[in-house]
Image 1: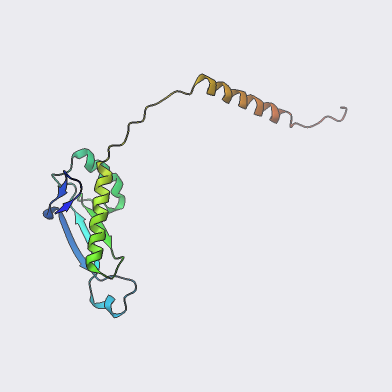
Image 2 (image 1 turned 90 degrees about the vertical axis):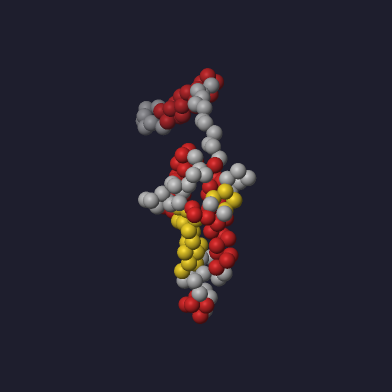
Length: 140
């Protein structure tokens, strides 16, 4: 069981871990020990998440979201399988926590009358400056 918040915890059946050989440093250890972790969370089928949270989670997950509606997190940062598992689980928890936050609605506002006047005055001044850049006559 993976605890996300005080009220939400993901069941073990929703998570699947697979291990493979990791790339990078480690000498002979790399060739014989499966330390890389692939954590798969069946997000679309999860009864613990609301449809709105699932939608936000899909947007946040990006390429990690599969066509079947699962989130796949791959970690091969350390030489320890246990530490990689912890990192993967923590990343998943952070992703779900981020999806739980409801974004604040943006309220459309109009520019103030003063700001509109200042903008138009600035445009007029800039236009006048550019108008003075023309060719100078010889007789002047």
